[in-house]
Image 1 (cartoon, rainbow, N blue to C red):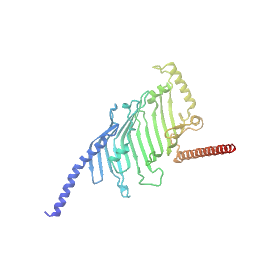
Image 2: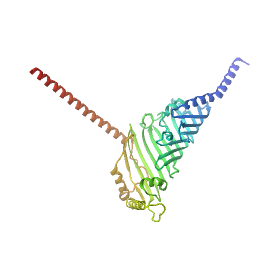
Image 3: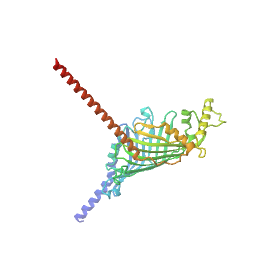
Image 4: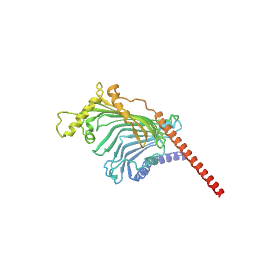
Length: 394
C-alpha cells in the first residue's frame, strides 16, 4: 500500500472516530453548562451531530427549578434542531436557526417562592450563547404548549395555549437592515380551557435590550361560561351563554407604548329567571341589573356589547382613559357597531409621538432647572456685592 493511500485511510479512520466521539463530548459539555443555572438546572438525554449540514439535535431537554414545588419542568423540549442558516451564509453572514418540536413551557405564579416558576431569575441568553455560540437568526416552534398556572390566584384561574405554531425571522437583522422593525413574528394557538383561538403577528427590533415592536393580537370566540369562577368572585354573576373576542394593537418605541384593547361580546346572557340552585337574593338582583344594563348598552342589530380601551404610557406604567372607554360602549350601542377586526390605526409613529413628547418635556424641565440655577447664581452674586459694599462703608 502506498504511503499516500495509508495517510488517506488514516485520516478517514480518524474522522470516523472523531465523529463517533464528538456527540459524547458535546453532551458532556451541554449538561455541564445546564447543570448550574442558579435557581434552575437542566439536563439533556442525547445529542446527535450532523456535520454535513452543520447541525446538531438535542433530545429530551428538561429545565426545572431547584427546590421548587412544581412537578412540571419549567421547560421541556423533546427535540430541538440547531443548524447553520445556509441562505444567510451565502450572503456572507454566519448565523444559525433553531427549530423546537413540541416544546412545553410551564409558568406558575405564586407569592410562595418555591411555588413560583417564571424563569425571571436567569439570564437565558447567556446560557443559549454557550450552547450555540453562533447568533440565532431564526427561531420556530412546532406544536408547542404554554401553561400559565395560577394566572389569577383567588379564585385560581389557569391559561393554556396549545398547538402553538410560532416563528421569528431575521433576529440578527441579516436582511432589511434599513428597517426600524426588521424581525417579523407570527404565532397562533388554541385556548382549550376557555374555547377559542389566539393569533399574533408583529414586527420587532430584537437587537435592543428593551425591544421595539408593533403587534396585532386577537383572541376569538372565548366562551363566557368558562370564566364563571372569576365572574362569581369579582362581579357576583354567572354567564349563561355568549362568546367574547379580544382585539389589540400595540406599538412600543424606547419603552413608550401606545395602543388599545377592543373586547367584544356576542349573544351574552347573564340573568336566568328559573335559576334557583345556589343563587342568593343579592346575586339575583345583581344579575338582573347586569342583564338590564346589557340590554341598554348592547347593539341590538349585532347582539353585541363592545368598546375600545385606549392604552398608553411606559412598559412599567400603562394608563387607560375612562371617558373614551365609556363613549366606546355608547358608540357601539347607538351609533355604529364595532367590527370584529383590527382598527389598523396604530403604528410605530404613535409610540414615537410619546417619545418626542417625553423628550420635549425633559428639555423643558432642563431649561427650567437651568433658569432656576442662573437665578440662584445671580441672587448669590448680588448678595456678595451688597456684603462687600457694607464692608467698605464700615
